[in-house]
Length: 267
Image (cartoon, rainbow, N blue to C red):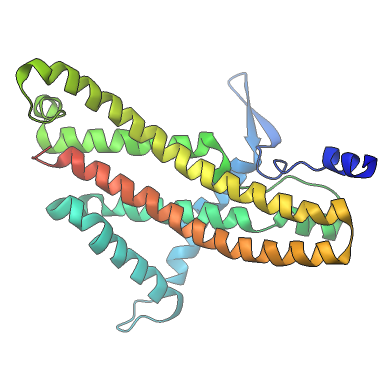
């Protein structure tokens, strides 16, 4: 029992998902920390800005390979996710929806690659250079905040400032108007938190579960437990790949819905 207690004390399922400071940068006398999650965001951004255009640079009459996958996803998001809610305004906002989907997907998939373990095996030294950026509430909160401002700005742009806030609440008898306006205002902030927390919680839970399953190998140190743990981890990793796509889709889908609500004349 003492052995298991020692192993449990050493194992920390949150170690690979929490933010680790890599170095600090001094700007105007202020020390700003650069973390592993910032590094993953930078890598994800470079992939979308450089690697993605290179991979799809050759336009083909009949798309093949990776180009076909990207085009299929883009057409699906435009026609089946955005257009039912944005209608004639789809082309105005589709670039953002494409960008946020592939950005979240890139971060989710990058977070699943065990870079730290690989470099640890190769170098023999522990490092925390990589991590799951979307398991950080600050990261998902920043993306949700941008989406929050986007659908309000879109509503104001399409309707005008006065008309947008005048139509923020549904048509109800005038005594209920102040109450309904307040409820709609609160619900718009609820949307912000729902976008941030849903993505954060799902990615965090998946990574903790994988860490716990692998931790059983260190705890019990038997071939039977190791085999079962590796098998379960493999299955859960496949599920996590599905979740990576699913959460990127859900974030994009809800953002399209919220923009549609904001610009709709009926709302």
